[in-house]
Amino acid sequence: MDLMEQAQRQAKAMLGIGVPKRVFVCSPLRGDYEANTERARRFCRMVMAAGHVPYAPHLLFPQFMGDTKPKEREIGILMGLFELSKCDELWAFIPATGPSEGMAQEIAHAENHGIPVIRIPTDVTHP
Image 1 (cartoon, rainbow, N blue to C red):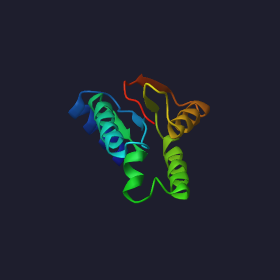
Image 2 (image 1 turned 60 degrees about the vertical axis):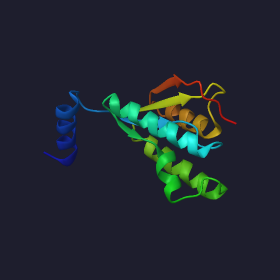
Image 3 (image 1 turned 180 degrees about the vertical axis):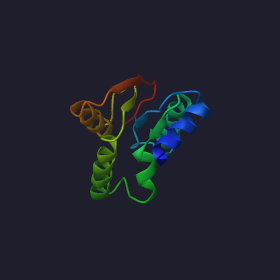
Image 4 (image 1 turned 90 degrees about the horizontal axis):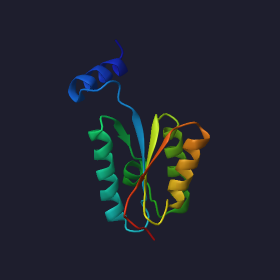
């Protein structure tokens, strides 16, 4: 049994589910970074509570890259899209004002690659 099979069995035993999906968490970051980061964490917890494995590049990459630096932001988005290609679904937490520019890129990438997009409206606005 390989590591992935072990992880799947353990997840099934712990969560009472079958094989968890890899879910790309798509939500705004720019604007109110602190509030948007906390929302992204909450969205990841929602994915996990549903029995899936969340992946949120906008929580990971700003730990060592500057989202306000255009070149680093571009690289971060490209790395996120690379990882999105490995995900089973994209959950888009759409603010009342619509998806941000980065979110729109992620949603388009998922749709263009046959990755299901689950749109979840939120009452949050972003600049």
